[in-house]
Length: 115
Image 1 (cartoon, rainbow, N blue to C red):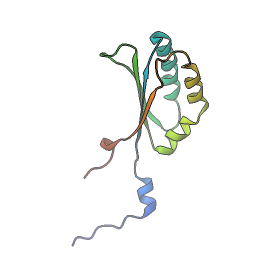
Image 2 (image 1 turned 45 degrees about the horizontal axis):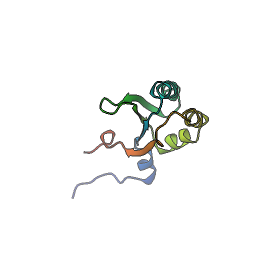
Image 3 (image 1 turned 180 degrees about the vertical axis):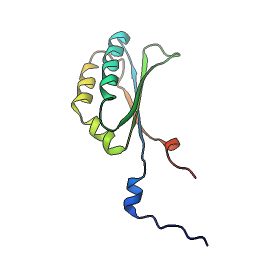
Image 4 (image 1 turned 135 degrees about the horizontal axis):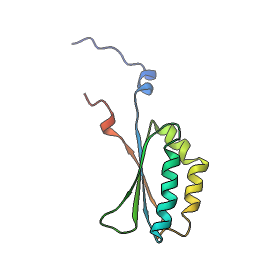
């Protein structure tokens, strides 16, 4: 048996965790929705804990937009979802969507040490 250091619970909490969120929107007014989401993306890039956020447009489905967010951890992601910035974006989408957005939370496996 090899000697390996024992990992304390606090060490596990200190490990890099990555929360990935996707928000998929189907627009009834694509240009207006793109403007709302573009503003949201630019402002969210400045939020503490936000590692990256991108806005993508579907090539195969006209009017479909996707936001991919990467957060330092679940706490930063949750704090953002409760923020005034998120609420403003959601309210600004009123009348611009063909259906409710699809929101999903992902574990960023490629950011973990898999050794």
